[in-house]
Image (cartoon, rainbow, N blue to C red):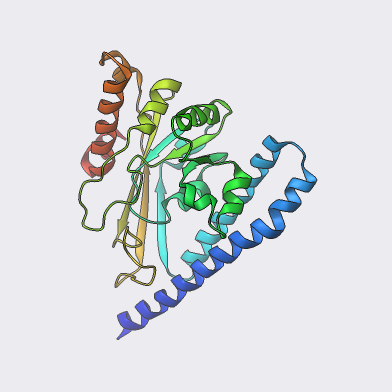
Length: 260
């Protein structure tokens, strides 16, 4: 009986949180970011301020979810993210992974789906922050490199989408590896584990587990790209080897702990 009541509460609380998230995005788009564009003339300064605002908004949102008992979380190795010009590559088990990472990371940039740039609730923050859009084709890698060189911390999910509900292996994309190889920036790996699973690909928001989900973010030591460059005859093969290494590292708890 107690578990049933707790689960019903978390369904209601989750719905409330998503409503707050959508309304917050709409208010930022309609009120806050137009005022920011009017007050600040420099596009670069506008984007920087917008990212600061989004980061703190996401921190408040996560605090709300935690206070309402929707979830709990812990971060191991957070100090490793307190730098600039990081290329952060992570696995992608849930819908809100990027919310967590942007909340943790200063000057965060990320690759977003083109659909989010058109969505009424998210296009305001996406456009104001100048996030890299995945519809730019071959130019996307160059946009990512430019962001890193500007001192931003770029967040990439090599899986491209959330991990399938059945736990099957995702088709890992090599874009993040190409960014690392061409920029010469080492990879900062982040392994995300959620117990019990929630908000997976295909899960409706109201499908909550029996007990509150706990998120664990493990930030590993940087992975040097030099070894992959030296050990491969060309960039394509180096990107393949680096992506395979990342897939194995980020999906294997034992390997990650050994490397961290």
